[in-house]
Length: 196
Image (cartoon, rainbow, N blue to C red):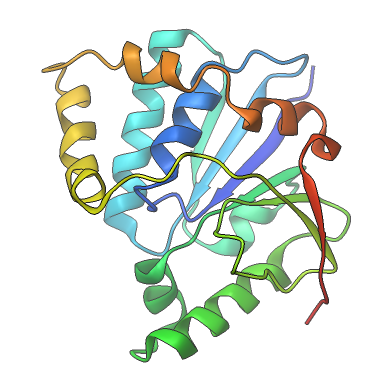
């Protein structure tokens, strides 16, 4: 059976991406997944690729995993797109130092790259409007504090080195609403927007 192509843009977002990976690691849908990861911060993208490889191996998902070097590659053939870019992503993608301008340019670039007719889910805050005709939103994952956010890359490294077990974190996200959205995008809130 042909895998469902699931693309995560902004996989370097440490407040969101680990929960997405944990959810995918415990996802066993009707179709296997081809998970594509992209972030403009290559170091963070590499960390999340290694984390996803470990999680998928532990859970024996059979998902294919692809770390993409550019936005177009990540979007090619995508059937589900999850957006979670953050400030560092936008500065690197837009190559601008002004945070507000970089954010607008990066989010517009990402929105233009989303293939027409593909279900797109924003995991950004409700105050951030994605410049698409329509997209989906869920209030997930639960927010984490600044200390947890700073510690997350180090926590992932502890899991990768097997200094600590990752299974409690995986169980924490096993009932994620992201799983329902993968199978049925209409399970999330539809946001009617305006395209670029």
